[in-house]
Image 1 (cartoon, rainbow, N blue to C red):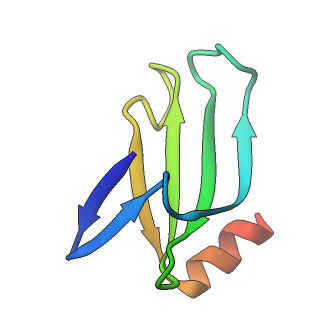
Image 2 (cartoon, one colour; image 1 turned 180 degrees about the horizontal axis):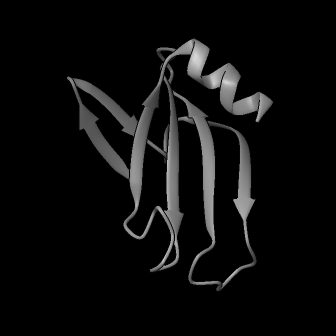
Image 3 (cartoon, helix red, strand yellow; image 1 turned 135 degrees about the horizontal axis):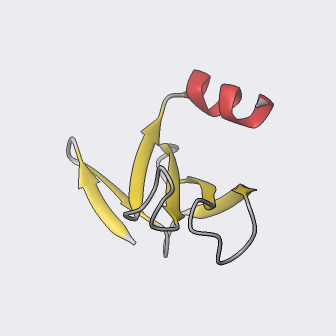
Length: 75
């Protein structure tokens, strides 16, 4: 997925994958997955996707600050 937010391009095809977290089982309508990436320029973001009843019913890219990235890693 590729998305431009505030003039920054976030692209799961070119960014480095760092980690992921899943809630629920594959195919669960309330389940979802968050994947953490970093761009070549050092911008962190989450690529999120989930079932129709999850908080990510639509695929999303969410930019993260360094502090938000650390919080996500420690959840």
